[in-house]
Length: 593
Image 1 (cartoon, rainbow, N blue to C red):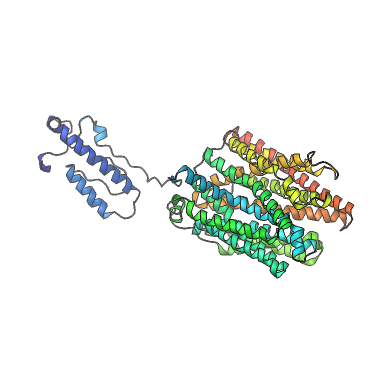
Image 2 (cartoon, helix red, strand yellow; image 1 turned 90 degrees about the vertical axis):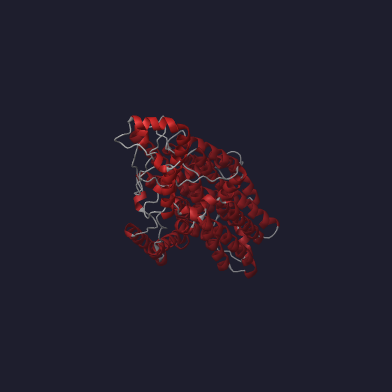
């Protein structure tokens, strides 16, 4: 049948009897063929509609061939609009035959389906949430056997012992923000895999410091370990944020990530105590490094292709830039302020170098804010930090600061005041493992049934009650009376505040800034712990006047714990105000996670 044997109806004669007669004669053959051609052409046109920059010559040629086969003499526009091809098919109305609609190009969905098996997804979630586990395990592995490590390195100064954990926490809190930004630029998967590998390398070096017997080398290795942990957490959360759209699964995965915090700390302290007491303390770091290398290889294999480096930038016009000036000022400010706060209790705030370092650090932070407000590619885009995000970050800082005081001085109380061994104290913290999982499940449920401000307020209450019960326990008391109860409660503060705040920031940030969203929460968590310990240490030194008797030690630890209670109480007040303000403004509104 030649194409000239018939023509498509025009607007002038579409209702004519000739066309109706033609359609009735050719209905069976033409209806099927032209309908198939029209659907194929429409599908091709919808795919090409997203490419509105340069015409695709092969696609245009293919469209012309389709027009010839369907005997259509109407030309379709090439301006990126969506059009429906007219077909002379019986049963289609005039509006359906000649409908032309113009609509803006729909951007690609940033949440691409993973297309993996359930077992593959299980491995992916497991290797990702282990980032939080390893980060907290790195903290506990040196805190529990601190005295044993100090003996092996010939260190007897308490200030030098403090840097075994302070050096790690300092670099974790300082470099998380930059690591998340680099992940936004180079790829979250790349940074995630390299973070595990980097962490394993410096864990091995930390163990070999026993042969050198140099405390400075060990402190450097611990600081480099912190940089490796800083690479892990924000990029792991960015991968999860990109993998799952807002919904129940995203809430549960983020809650599980937060639940790994007590598990990581307890297991790090437990295995650190076992190797230090029963074998040799360097094995703590060597086995930790082997675990990090294993996770690096596993992450390389199980992170889905939909989250690869190329897929990360599909929805972006170009890769974001790096603000090197802001990064340098931010790192300098955070490091100097942290060093000043932790050296203040050791050397006294009246010592010139202490307050001089603090002044320089604060000036660097002010310069950082000034630069970020004017940078083309800011490390911390201020436009996304609305009132809700800012208030949430403040509450997280207060709550986790009180937690840092609780965990550090509870450990000292059990070891120095009650005279327990590191392995015994580690075992006493194991109830936090079960409570962490329960808190994660409760958080996932509450985030889909209650406002996020309510969840954060409950987390502040948990921080306060846990600190209160632990701070007022007498020296000679059975473990089950108060310490056990305090350990049961504190994980609810940790595992409610962390996922709730992460979800708030994740939903506020665009997909290309998921690394930044996760970085902010982790930076606040780690840095607030360090600053709060500096405040508590200042209180401890002030009330004891650097006394060395047993009574002075007990009183100093108790006053430091009272500081944590006061800080957590302030968090409850601000959390209640936050919830009340949200209720007055929005009512009982559940965030669309």
